[in-house]
Length: 256
Image (cartoon, rainbow, N blue to C red):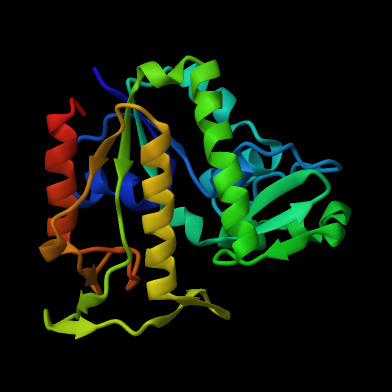
């Protein structure tokens, strides 16, 4: 029986519910970046209780807290996965540096209330596509691989979901439309589709060089199309169902 850990975005996690397929035993570690994943915990952090009648969900809050406290790798080791899927779409988020810690400036963190705590006043934003963020990622990647080795996790099948931002989408009438290059990570935070695809290509290539035996899973370019009817709304990485079918076919061939 496969035990699957996903490090990264909800793109891979969504495959099974979108296609109404049975979900494997799953550990999902999201809203993190490799520089954040291997960084030191945030000092002065006060955990915030769940807010069942507002704010972000419990799973979102748990992901934010794991990124701040740096508990994800320990959780991964305790899970003992047979397969680890790397999904770098969450590398779109800016980073924050505070003291010796790097954290992922996700929408979930923004909405969580943690940035109102005293420690956050010293946080410095590092734009995701900046040279500084790229350098932090290049330094973090071999540290991450070494952490996998130290925890005995390289014995798992390591899979890279080689995703990209789609350049076209199907509208609600099923017509093919172009996506503009100028988009937003969230409202008020601009992003360039081409810049983020270049960033993804770079990070995916670098991790491939570092992990011996890494398996790459990539959807056929013909189905790299966003979907205005997607359950989470229109986004360059919310794809048509055929995208997920193609990736799932490849994952099944790898024992998932």
